[in-house]
Every structure is written in C-alpha cells, then in structure tokens.
Length: 410
Picture 1 (tube, rainbow, N blue to C red):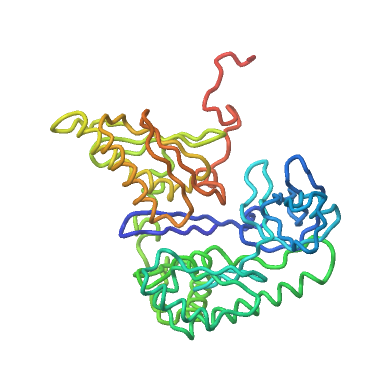
Picture 2: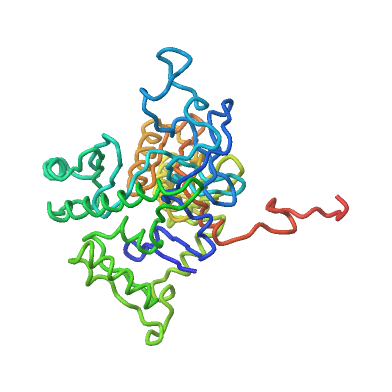
C-alpha cells in the first residue's frame, strides 16, 4: 500500500491511498476501447464493457457525435442515445468517475490527456486558461498557447503553467500529441474491450497535479518510488528536482508519518467528531443520499452575546468544514447545519467564508446560500471513495447501521 499525505505547513489537508488491488477500481482517467453492451433509452444511458468486473455507464450528455453522421427521426431535435449507439459497437472512452459500491464507472467520449502544464483535448476546439491565474499571466500564456496549439486539437492551460516558458509548454504539448497518436493507433487494432492508456502511479499523478515552486519538498521513504518520482520531476520540471528528498527509514529514528505528525491527524480524520480550537465541534455523518455536518458550540461560551458567539463559532466551523471535505475526500451532496444566526449579514459572511475556504480545494464544488433554517446545501464532485471507505470495511454484525439488536432472533 502506498500512502501520500499533502501538508500545508504542519496541517494535513489531503490523503491518498493506493493498493495493488486497486487496478480494477481506481481507474479514473484511464482510456479504453469499449464495446456497447446495451442501450437504455428510458435512462438515456448505455452500458459499456471496458474489461472491468462491472460494466461502465455512458450517459447521453457524454456521447460525442458528428451531426452530419446522425439521421434523427425528429428534424432539428437532439438525437436520442439509441440513434447514436448500437449494441456491439466499439467506441473510444475515458473514465471520469471510479466504480463505487454497486455502481460501475462513469465514462465520457470527450477524451482528455493531462500533462504537466496543459491538458490536451484531442479532436476538439476546446480552449481555456485556468481562472486561478492572474490577468497578466493569462495574457502571456495565451500568446504562447496560440503559437504551440496543435492543429485539430484543443488545449486547456493548467494553474501549474504559471511562470512556465514557451519551450516548456511546447515540449509538454508535443509529448501529449505523441501520446495521443499512440492511443488513437492502438484503438484501431482490434474490436474487443481493451485498456489503451493507464494513468500513472498515484505518486506521479499527485506530483503532476500539485508540485510547483510553492512546495518546499517532496519526502519519500521508498527508494524505488523516490527514484521514479525524481526521474519524472527531472524530466518535466528540472528546476524542482532537488526538492524531491529520500527519507531513509533505516537511518531515521521515527517512521515518516510519525516524523511529520501525519498519523495523529489521520486518526482524528477518521473520527465522527471534530473539535474546533475555540471549543466548538463538528459532527460528520454519512448517509446513502448525502453527508450531514452538524455545527455545535460545545464549550465555546463566548464573551459578549449569543449572536456574536454563534457567528464566531460558525466562521471557525466554515474553515474547518472545507478542510475536512478535502481531507476525508467527501463527495456528492453535503448539508451543513450551522447554528442559527438572526442577523442576515452574519449569515452572508459565514457563507462567503465557506466559499473562500473551498477555493483552495481543486475538486469542483457548488455552494448555495444559508437558508432561514441555518442549512447550507452544497455539492462536491465525487471521483473516488472517501478516506473512511478506503481505510475500513463494513461491520459484519450490524452491516453498517451502527446498532446490534438486543434480541438475536430479530
């Protein structure tokens, strides 16, 4: 098992786990030649065999087609999925969401290949530059990208491209185009389901997504993995290769997660209750449909009046909620029950604080305003199972309900 901890200062903000057995389940980003098994018009979806234990699902909105190639029964109307896909048909597709529980993987035909600085979108007119970059940098990058953009393909410039030279961007684009040419050629050889492109090991993937000049170091305690990551960084970002460090477990007095205080923070992240610095707390409960987070004042009794105490507690909770969502990798629908505030301005400030804290999260989120009941409804894109699911198994006695009936005959 490989574990990766992402720290901001001494604070654990993200945690990843990869096992050898994950090859069939952790497939987000992989590209397959798939075979259509059946099409369900009533669900506007098709089930695709990609060679995994469960068939993957492709929804109508993720199907790519050429308008000129489709004869729709209704003039001018968007073609139905049964007009676009037929059982037995072979398609090129990419996984956008890992299989979770009884659900198969989710697919798209809008294939994209991520590089260090750009994302290549083959056979597309897609074009964009990360909104996280300032206007001056966006203008500089736009001039470079206009010159290196490959004909017939789309490009999206990533946040990591900040400060990158024209030569670095051009090298990244050329490497991705060569990679795509290989995938496209392989897709034409054969008819059955096949894996055409596998995302790199999770350590390299995290480095690709995260590593920039703001990071002080990448510390690795496995020699083989250290050499793999060092070689990758040396190839794509040579000026950062000296920040990849080897942590020798034979020499160091403590294991790497003990040395950087990761273990204790990880144990707290598995608890149902999270304590806030001022004495308040969060209680996090998962259900089939959504995750509920309850905010309590606890020992936080304040110093002035109730409204001020509640407002300060909610502000503190908003920041911690954003951190816990990242750390626990909680996805889907989330409902946060903040303590009721009478003043509308205070509710707006807490909502703004939550959005600001979530801006540091690379996973897409959508947050609605605090309701009169003090509830915030939000969504966070779910790609994989969360931290708790990846480090636990369902209890064989209560089957996950958290209760055991007194009468064993029930």
